Length: 63
Image (tube, rainbow, N blue to C red; front, side, top):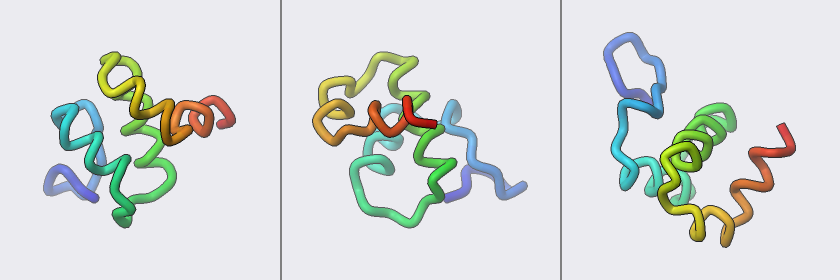
């Protein structure tokens, strides 16, 4: 997943809904991109219940 022409993923540039779609869907994003998306959502305090439901916050804390 890329967000600009320099081929870098920057979760802060995406809306919360798009981040949730990336986290929730089994899309082909790297583990680092997944952690960045989860971290961004948790900092925004969006989709917290959903993240807890899929244990995404637990994975974030392990790294």
